[in-house]
Amino acid sequence: MEIDRRAPNYAELCRTFRWQVPERYNIARDICGRWADERSRFALYYEEESGFTSAHTFWDIQREANRLSNVLAALGTLAGDRVAVALPQRPEAAIAHVAIYQMGAIAVPLSPHCRPAALEHRLGDSAAHLVILDQVAQPTLAQIHQRLPQLRHVIGVAAADGAGIKPWAEVLEHASPRYTALETGASDPAIIVYPRTATGGGAKGVVMAQRTLLGKLSAYVCAHDFLPQARDLFWSPAGWGSAGGLWNVLLPTWHFGLPLLAYNGRFEAARVFDLMERYGVRNSFLSPAELTMMMQAVADPRAIYDLDLRTLASAGEPLGETVLHWASEKLGVTINQLSAHDAMSGVFGGGAPRWPAKPGAMGRAFPGHRVAVVDGQGKELPPGEVGELAVHRQCWGEDDPVVMLGYWQDAAVTAGAFVGDGWVLTGELARMDEEGYFWQAAPKRCGAVIA
Image (tube, rainbow, N blue to C red):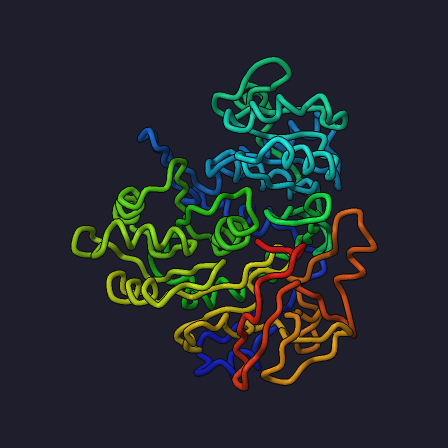
């Protein structure tokens, strides 16, 4: 990705932007392998609600990922096989993602709090042959495991144990810390994401490529005021079993070799501010609901806590003026809002100070993305007219790496998502104004892919 941090305005930032996606690319090599030789470079600070803490360098993460890749290979995992990860924010979750990507296998990130029907659908639809989980997801899996004949192996983290569960510590203990990563193509599948809301017989798995991470970087850099900068350290409560937690937090943060804070515990405003103070959190991604809870619990955070917050992003429902004003006055930051679609999240939003926010607007297209309002045939509509938000396969003559590969094993639904000369529909009705800002025109359609 080539982005001109000196560009004086939005138009120049977009005009000079280029993706430059290589033919061969692997997420694991990008986010961990290339940093691992710097043995003192910290990747993760971890804290549990109980007070337990640990710290991990990229070298630590890579060695454990190598061990896990060797274990997964011994259990029959091949390139293209699906491996599910149903874990909260904890080191094993990040290690698992690195291990899966460097094998050329496909990660299926899942919330450990999935209900039985949702977990059964996702594991069954993806035909995952192995799942890595903790004690939170274990009872749910026990209810449905017998109906999943393709699920042959379960690796248990923390207190997950019992018949048929291979304890993480035991299986990794004697595995080799050396592993030769597979050379993958940038367009090879890497992740299947299942939207949290969908209708019509279960959520459709959205297949994302190795290159997808590169496609997320424009939004990440712009939403966080040209990160990385000195002392940047990221934390977000967004779970790594969600698209938001992966694309907006874990993977792009490690792409830049930055340290990340992981907290495994309940969301409580006082604890959030305490974490931010103690670890010197500079960058965060919080939902509108979480920001509202924080505002209501602590009206003037900087009067109590010694905070060093530099950037703050959010996604989901539009933020109200009260929260935006509170963040500006009491946290000293402007909240940049991002689009939230599992198929193509982070293609438009806010990028202060290069383009100012408009109250109520969803933002502008981030550099490298061509976004428009189109009709049912994929024809671009003029400003003011209501149609469907869509993202084009190309921008400035380059393929947009953020565009999904398709829906898992459903060619018909995949074909229906693409219209015209390469527009990918998001399922959201909107209008665009004369300055290129998008405005939501109606609630998201039933069946739309929503993060």
